[in-house]
Length: 235
Ligand SMILES: [Zn+2]
Image (cartoon, rainbow, N blue to C red; front, side):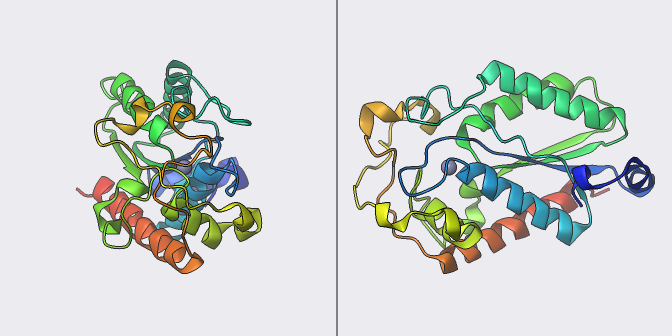
């Protein structure tokens, strides 16, 4: 159930039985010349909506601009909310939902630069909110997916596959590249400034993906998110 498609009486009725809300958060940032700027947002929103469908839980409107300040900001089209601004946006999302009675919050995150702001926002509200629980999942980090692919990096095999499955009409496959750029092992991803190490906007082994792999990654991710809803709601 998508909050934006419900009426206030639908929400009131829901809150008589449940207090869980799923919040998708992505980014609008370069994903090479082959994938759309909305890659992270599209993946997060579709995973959240499918998780909401399978659990009959409410999905809040997607936060579609993320924190790209230190990584991909130099590439054409990338938009960014500063870490501070994004933290405040997330805090206000949480406070709005809390005000009406939501107490369990699941973030379905599609973008690495959002991890710290989400954590900061939760840390700000957690001492104030009563009887509340929070969970954050970033699909590419799920150990459950490790067997399917080797975390193929930014705009790499994982994201290519995800887009071939979720939004094939937006993939420009003629622009796939085999350029081999790997994450240097001694950085965490948020420390990288991409334009200093790649001209293509790709940090990955290659872009060899498939819709079938995308389907598997999506399915497994949604299964994990469904499990997270159950964990949030355990007694
Ligand atoms: Zn991405």
